[in-house]
Length: 175
Image (cartoon, rainbow, N blue to C red; front, side):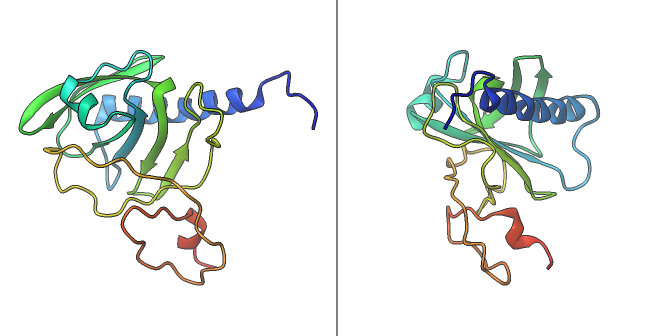
């Protein structure tokens, strides 16, 4: 295979992170509408990530946050976003660069993206859509990170996924 001197993977990741940035900008201005809410997974020790130490200890590699009912002070900039969520009934400001994101999912419309974290050559980008199982009822506890893997394409109808299992969007489409 020929060497990619243009860097299509990096261009694709950057463009798709722009989708997340634009979605966050929309809710920054007008709030969440309808069934929309966001699961954002990021590398906790990526450059520029600023989260409380107890979260870094609890989630040493990756963490998923949910922006749904209880979030405050959402600020979206070109390269990062900031939001305050509650953990253990305490407000915690989070500063997350878009480059640290590894996954984005809006279960309200079954839309998701997967990214390659900077320096993570092993993980494919723009992979399957994530379907979270057992979503937390409120933002008062830190959610568990979700693994992402493709589901078999030959399933005739969607089945309830096992905890932590991720399935593709195609399994939810009517044929």
